[in-house]
Every structure is written in structure tokens, then in C-alpha cells.
Image 1 (tube, rainbow, N blue to C red):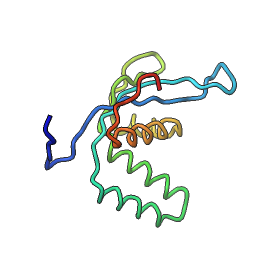
Image 2: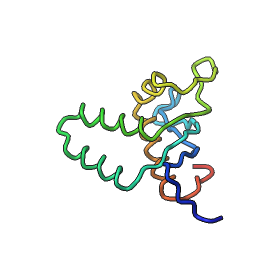
Image 3: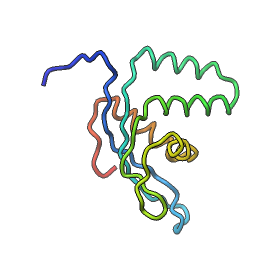
Image 4: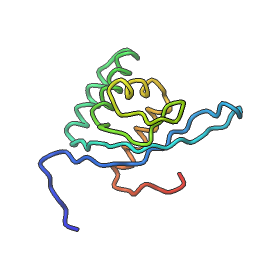
Length: 125
């Protein structure tokens, strides 16, 4: 396949594995999976975001910046359910609720970095 130089930022789906504390086994984790649609970023946008982050002085400002960054790259999700097993549609409100969980944010960052490296998602990880 030939390399396509697109004038718009490409969007793509990527598997995300969220490791959360197991509520029934102390010290253990459970892996939950979803798919996220990411929007690629330019090198310039990445550098600008890193410079903005470095200039922040409070934990609250850094957390707000991190949330804004994730809102900028995550465009949709699939395989997200509520407590009763019903599908949860992607929305600003639902995404903001998910961002409140550190393990969700960590999983998103891990998946985005992995996808940006041009490596296929590893099965079983």
C-alpha cells in the first residue's frame, strides 16, 4: 500500500485495555477492554501541548490540561457498558465521567502512544 499524505488528521480505531483493581481479590487487577477512535496529532501540536504542560504550576491545572488533551484525541468509543450491561454512547458527559478514573486515563495514554508508534496492537496484553 502506498503512503497517503492526508490534509486532515487521520482517525482510527484502537483497542484499549483498562486494568482496574479487582473488587473481590486484594492486590489483583481485572482487565476490561474497549475500542477508542483516536485522532492523530501533528508533531507541532504535540510539542506545543508539552510546552504548555511544562509551564503549569498546580496539580489542578495539570489535570485539566491532561483532560483537554484526551478530549482532543479521543473522538468515539465502542464496547462501553453501564452497570446493567447496556451500551453507553460516547458523549461529552460519559467521557468526562470516565476521565475521573485514573486507570482509564492511564489506559488511554498507553494505547495512544502504542498506536502512534506504528506497532500493531499486541494480542493478549
